[in-house]
Image (cartoon, rainbow, N blue to C red; front, side, top):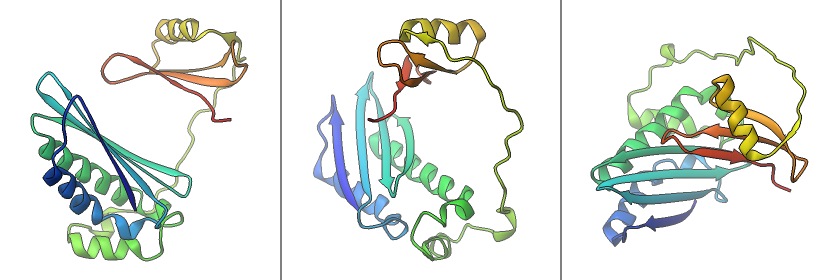
Length: 179
C-alpha cells in the first residue's frame, strides 16, 4: 500500500508517521499492492481531525475522527475502518484479496460469525423526478427547502448530473462526475 500523509495547519512528526504505518499496516493484507492510503491531519481550535481515505480497485474506504490528540483520533479512525470492514465482510470479500478477512479477524479475536449475517442491500423506495438545470446555489436552496441532506440536480454550467450535500460541520459539498 502506498501512503500519502498530509498535515494541514500542523507539522507532523516522524513518530506520528510511523504510528500511521503501523496502525494502517494491519489492513495491508486486505488490499492490493496498488492501494493508496491518504491520511490528512487538520488542526482547528486545539482539536485534531484525522481523515483516512483508502482507494483500491475502484472502491473507496473512508473514516474521519476528531479528538484533542492526533494519536487518539488516529486510533478512532482505525477502529472505524475495521468496523466498516467487519460489517461489510461478505460484500467486500469480492473486491478485496481472497482470505484477507479470515487472517484479520483471527488476529483481532473480536469477530463472532453468528453476529454477521449475510445481508442483502434492499431498496425499499424508488423515486423518479425531473432533473432541471440549476446552479449550485439554487440546488442548495432547493435541498434546504425540502429538508434533505442531499439533492441531485443537473448542473446548468456543465450540463452534468451533480449532487450537493450538507456536511457534518454545516458547510456544503458538491459531487461531480469525473470526466
